[in-house]
Image (cartoon, rainbow, N blue to C red; front, top):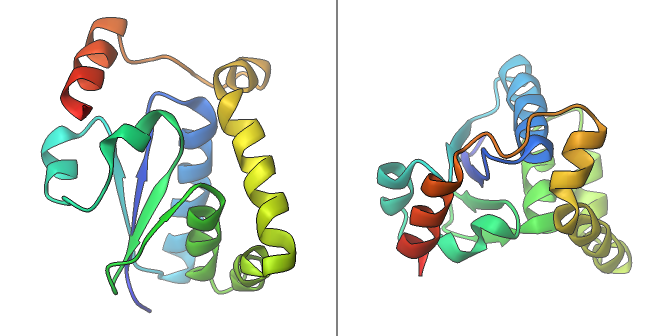
Length: 139
């Protein structure tokens, strides 16, 4: 199984819940998954190809071939490394469904803080001062 690196917003309850789910599934499937929070500046800096400005917009993945995927495509890439979920990752990449999944992803991502609160997930755990300094660094 080829490794995949997943970059996510650790300040988002929806993102964190997704990452926890993927990590649990990857461990049970012995899939190679590396998880890095955007706020881990030193780790993210090792991957110049990853756009830190995307941190407030959605997840990104980097596969072993150097391909970066964002948002719904990144979700599909994560699912592809999980044997029992591979079918869904492939299905999400079909041109017929890709646009719909991206629209759904964007709807969730744009409302992630509200949805996190509704579902009782921790959101905005990182102090505002730290988030502001991250925003300056990412420009």
